[in-house]
Length: 341
Image (cartoon, rainbow, N blue to C red; front, side, top):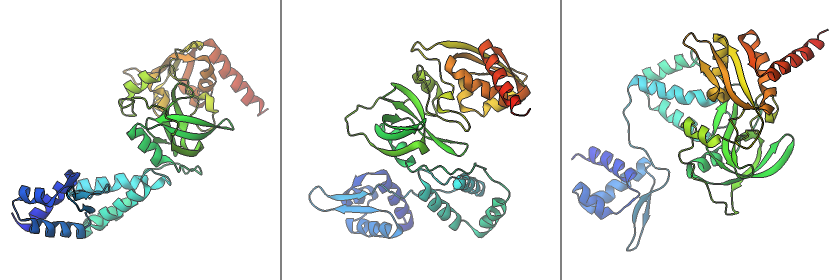
């Protein structure tokens, strides 16, 4: 085996192993311990973060920030990955902001000149627009870590002008219209809530000893499990632009709250507008011709939200049920018309 191939295989091996000894590697690669020591020294000079421990139980281990082995990309794959990362530049806050910038710089630096020229031309021809926000989101990393590690957090949260302590177990984080949100199990409310991340004034790991729930199968990519677990959750925390915090529609509750049967007919344009709303997934029904309707049981206190939403759709939506919702739409429209007399 050539030295270059041995070094490449050795890099992949030490990245795969969490801890190893020189003797183990020498036996695996069929070389002397002295050769392995020289190879490990070269890997360290190349940037592989190795840590050595002396003693009878010592050896080598790779630090948490491990170096990934080389991966070959086609030109099209390289361009696609570059722009996937480039699309995040509009977000001032990311859970991995510095790392994404560093990765993008490395990716660009090691590309051939003609590929860099192609990317430079494409930078001004493609964009992923995100609204600019003044809000700050300093706790995204700890929220994401808690979601993946099944940890309980204590947050200082502000809603409706009031601040209070909450114990939550994050499910994940997501960005929408330039804002970051965190669906999480709220131990105070006993159900899943959607928290605005910019309303968190402080976030820390819980020290009160609250036992975390098993939410491994409840995540943003598993909507079925997410929806099932969310039954009974009065989602009051997410604030859409221009709406009060308690106006976001929720799932069908099982806690005795009064319900209304919702039916809003939608044109094709109305369906497309609803598809852009994350909350509409459980209520939106689409016909083969592209038209559809919003239908299902909803809490009566969500009708104010739906009235405002229907007005925003103009002639692309028509309320059929409940009559109270149609009445709220008329009241809002009358109030708007009164302003322009």
